Image (tube, rainbow, N blue to C red; front, top):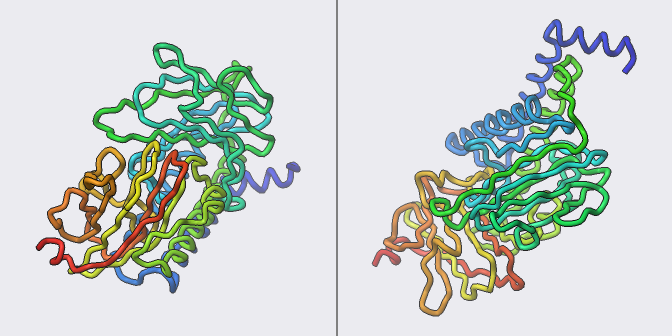
Length: 369
């Protein structure tokens, strides 16, 4: 950067222009929440604007505090930060990487059911894509007798646990998936760049300016991406067709997962019956109910998700779930948590077959009777 440009940047920070311009850019996010194809009632719009605050809080923390590629630190998706049909059975972790460096992940496997690592090129804030460059899960992971392991993250192949990156790699995504959070212990993980004993450089006007620009791009890219995705589900109302798997993978999906996504809407006296007549051999499966903004509903207080372990099966091995506003007296009730519409997702995880799902809308009274 030339001395003139650097002086202008510093002046924009000194006089507050950089911050004012950042705030002005955030204002236009309201246009996405209030677009003609989004629900126009106060309830869903309020959730839409709360969604913006959650994403902004998480992005500011990630970018301003934990984005140093030389000194990475694994961060979990913030408390109650939800996006893109986040799996209620998951802990999501990650950090920024640079393909020019080598990294080492140190971990204790513990008892979490599923653990996977993906290196990613692209981002929601740049090209709207998150392409998997390298992948390893607990099936391949080598651990010692105490469950400890080390993994090298690098361009060049390494012996033992190795997670590939490329020159284009920007980040790592880690999924810890539970069948029962009350019984399983999450993996303990840390990451460091190989070959540095230095300390991070002090914060600068340049870092502030770059960070604000990155947050703005991320917010606009992420909110627009998932708003468009949600709107695209509407033609499949109250059904669960297979999603476009290539598209799911292009935005950071786990290669071991086959996805079903769609839109739901129910009157107060209606229920949605979802049946998996065939449950294939798989690591697990799960279903979840989301709001319009592709945020999982509040699973702290409502049963909005079930999986292979928590669902009750029929005698023939099939499974039936009931989405309804009131409890129909069924152990597989999925609570709408005060919502009349939203989106939903089914996952077959680690399955070699991906049978379809049958759905039908019925009167709630017919189930209670």
